[in-house]
Length: 398
Ligand code: PGA
Ligand code: ZN
Image (cartoon, rainbow, N blue to C red; front, top):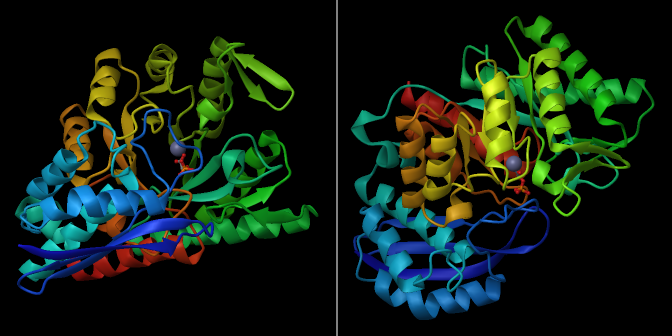
């Protein structure tokens, strides 16, 4: 049974305040977790409140109710969070308080059972697969000013023999891109997730990423592809009905055509949010065209929400889903989205946010649910925290 829950403000990787929760059980189990925060957030995500407000409201409404629950019964904990909030988007206690408490309770539950978190969450029926890490290596969009329009270019070491080799491969691609930019005399800062953020055209970024991925793939002797998070909702001008790449615009049909061409030309293994979050129809059109060749993934489209995913499944909008627990507010909701996805043949990609902490819950979630991929950056402490945890879990779980 949960004895106490403390909530505090801590720093995230952008220097903004976020919510951290500590959960302590009567039997001495302890768990601590923190909420991440997005910059290119989806319109339909659960509500993140200012941390002070989220903490005050959670203390008043949620904590008393949670003291009657058991930390190792995740569904009970998360149902109590939902009941205490009383809305369908956590606008009362904040999805940031909710997800921090939900994840901290899971860790306390694992501690009570004396099991690692991935084992507690995955149970005895967990498989032995490890996710392929998608590493953000160049980007812009909402994550960096004056860089590419496409938000993320992602290294995808699909042929790596182990998770550790995949993690190091992404770091090598990142380093190689740094060298290639240097050779071209292109200065580059880094964006919010640690990816290079040079002032180059998207076309030049494709050239550089392709070269780097090929060089590293040849060096390491296994296949490394790449993919994109277009984050197209940020490019879409709903009034004009066009996608804006700086001064250039594309109609919806042109955008579908453009992405389909990129998939073929660069043999992309993964394309996230290639279209606006309200346009299931164009998503379905694109998936129909290239869904056999590549993963078309819904992030802002689905926001880890089973109702939105169900709509997508019915319309054939995609073939994979990004899972971000803070988009929906609890681990139970994230699990339900994963389950629905898997039942319908959708690939699952567990993901960080652009604003992160040292929290490593998503690494455990990815292993526990046999996710095909995890998207959690390439370099920088809040990113390597997750990657290094994956390496440790792989060693532990062999
Ligand atoms: P966000 O970006 O965390 O800023 O929303 C990550 C993503 O779009 O996948
Ligand atoms: Zn995204």
